[in-house]
Image 1: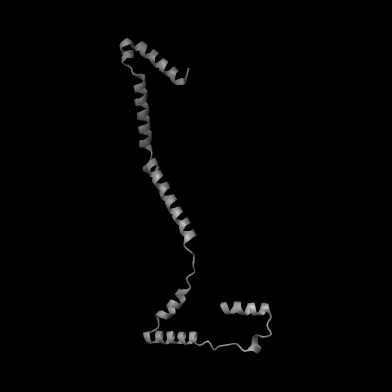
Image 2: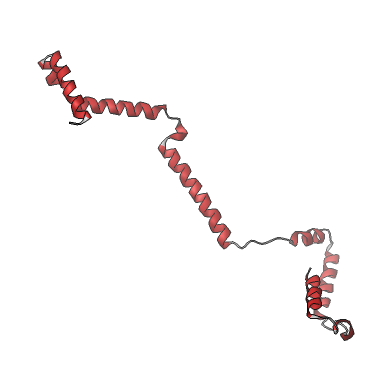
Amino acid sequence: MTHDEERDLELERLAGRLGLKAAERLDVERTAAAVLQRLRADRAARRPWYIRPAWLRAAALVVVMVGAGLVVRSRWVPSRTDSGHYVREELQDLSTDQLREVLGSLDQTLNDATIQPADDDYGDLTTEQLQALLQSLEG
């Protein structure tokens, strides 16, 4: 016999002591369901609004969405370093005529392919020295 069945029998015995009419009117299952429902409602009402299950689910969903967005962004958006702001700051101070002058000198530099190092300067360098020189020219 389970614990619930023992309670039911005890309630029936108590009801029998109250009299046959009272025992016939007593619906044990309905009374137990009403008590459980009231206890659950009281417990849910005592919880703060932010702990209620709907709010917890919504908060968990927001956290998952933000985390997924950050993961996707870090995987598919290439990270880049923006060093162009140094040039941008310098060019903002120039007038229109000065900008044209700078662009003209850039065009001349790009079109002028006659700059060649003297053979005597680099001819006797080793491979390591040439690599070091190239790396220093890259920045």
